[in-house]
Image 1 (cartoon, rainbow, N blue to C red):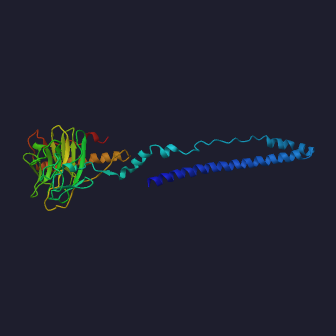
Image 2: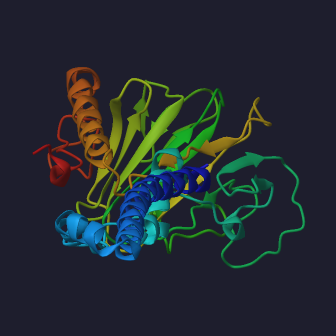
Image 3: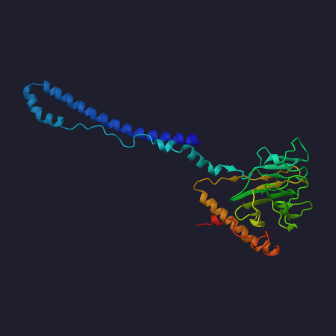
Length: 336
């Protein structure tokens, strides 16, 4: 499609400039025909008797005294090569931005516990129960834990990803320290380097504090926002745009996304990391950033007026909050 559009644009420019050149050629042909006629008449007059030549001399001289126009070099007659070939790859890439998506987090199958299957595109996972033939490499979670890590390692910046939970009756998602233990009986709580929210057996919806914090709103899609500068991770209900829970004061060190699809009744329903649209450098980038700012502000405002009124957190200085003690997630993306 892009190739056809560019060839069409080039063809249009060629047709336009050929039309200008053809018009100039017609004018030059008319001038040449007029000059040929004048020269022919001069030759005929010169061959005539002397008295006739003298009678026509004055008119003939005036006609031959007309200056012959010189061919004019037209400005802009050449093709605008930079328009068609300059930064060609970049221009094509920029136009593709509105249709391109990518996964902000991909799964690392080398860390997947036995019995956990990762999709071919590394964005989905399912608990199938079979041990399979994966090796017992040191990076892998122990059998029965049901966990898998994201491939990306986070040290700086703010990172966001969205997970589709569907109607699963068990799941875990959040972040973990790169060096958190993956062997033996995995204790997936904040004291062991895991900061997660989960739907446990029996429909208990909890955050991995010690002791666990019970939550009530059961989301179908969750947006995870990891801020490596503020050392916090927040979980948002993507459907109603409300803050579900936030951990603060995460220790220094590399972090990775962590997931578990659990088991339960929906064995065949995968847990899926949703793709996101690239912002790129197109003219829609600013609007997309503004929408993101409004989404976050709306999320935190709604949480402050609902869930924060229902729950109490640990004493002041706690490393986690439900809603009230949160600050803007994107202070550097405020609308100008």
